[in-house]
Length: 296
Ligand code: NAD
Image (cartoon, rainbow, N blue to C red; front, side):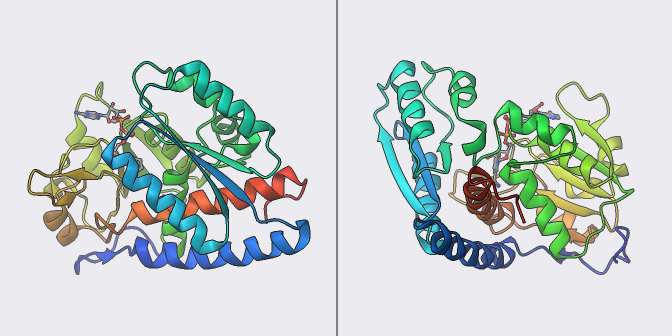
């Protein structure tokens, strides 16, 4: 079992793309088994409202990934002018549709729609993103069901590389409902000692410098200078930021961080592919749970 503080010989790059491919292979096998047993593949409805260009790319990738592992994907592309009532009516139809095991509403939705109200309307048993308060609650009570994809992706990536989280000082920068908060709950479940930093944090640098495990989800290019990274730390950079020249960078100053860290995720090719792999895995978990079969 590896310890988190390592000799500094340059970081091990956590290859999310390769690990995600392995996760997808496992999912494809489970999809085949489900289809053989129940006469249909697991199904995921992917709903997009409006034409936000970044969302369109994400949605396309998610649908393509479904096809690759044999999950049936149901596309619902709605115009920007869609009302909240219309979206809620669609969610209700999907909740009632037997072929649909997972429902994903691509965020952000137009400002005229209350995103929380829509998320709350999704049947928690079909919440493939793991965002529903009921699923967050299960995670908080250390009996996870459908787990939020990005935080779950961090845990699976750490497991894959033998990074032991138990007892480690873990710092999460960012406290959003979809990444930071559930990330803290996942790390707590893994028995790390967890600190969450946010806009109210007094001395961010001091917190980051203590971190043996660092997860950053802020959404600002290279917001955490690499020089702050504790030598040997495991660094998980969730941020995806597009620079004016088109280049994608994370929330951590990568070059300086990679020279100090023990492990680090690249951007792109780190948590992005892991998040999609976990979405697919969650869809199959949801399909089995709905048939009364516990998650393996
Ligand atoms: P968000 O805007 O909802 O939350 C950002 C968080 O950062 C907030 O909790 C805020 O308190 C914190 N923050 C902002 N400024 C801060 C400061 N100065 N000091 C400390 N904390 C500060 O964002 P989000 O939805 O959690 O996403 C964060 C990033 O992760 C974005 O770049 C997003 O694109 C990316 N993301 C990536 C994936 C993936 O698949 N890899 C998935 C989800 C989000």
